[in-house]
Image (cartoon, rainbow, N blue to C red; front, side):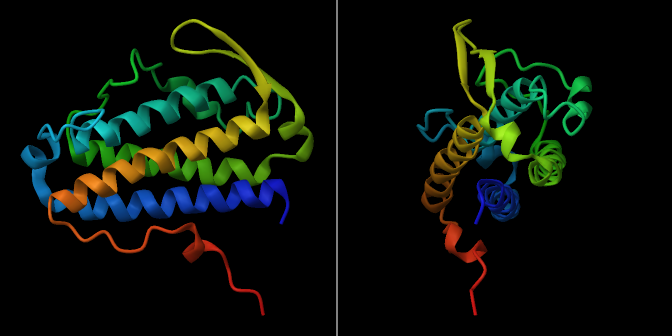
Length: 178
C-alpha cells in the first residue's frame, strides 16, 4: 500500500474510533464526563477536547502547505485554539458534532494528497513559539499517532468508569486480502 493509502487508512481508523468512543461515552452524562479522573487532561471531556484542539491546530498548520489549501479551506472560519487544554465546546453533544465534522474533513482531504505533497517540508511554529520544519508526510504520521495516543487514555478512563470498550485495533480496519 502506498504512503497515501496508509494515511487514508489512518483517516478511516481515526473516524471509526472517534465514532465508537463518543458513542460509548455519551451515556455517562455531562457530570461523569467532566469528572476529574486524574488524567493528564483531567477528565474524559478534557481529553476528548484536547484531541479536537490539537487536530485543529495541526490542520490549520497543514492548510498553509502548498498541496493542502483547497482541502482545508473551511478551517479559515475556525478560531485558533489558545491552549492545548482549551475546551472550545460548551457540552459533549457539541463536542461530538464538531468531532464528526472534523473527521469528515480529514477523511475527505487525505486521499487527495499526492506523493509530492508528502515529500515537501512544512514550516510551522509550535504552541511555545518554537519553529519547526519537517517533512509533511511524517507530520501526518505524528498527527494520527497523537490521536491514537490520547484515545488510548480515553479507553482507560472509560474502562475505569465501567464501560466495555471492545476492540480498538487498527487491524479491524485493514481489509482481508483474498
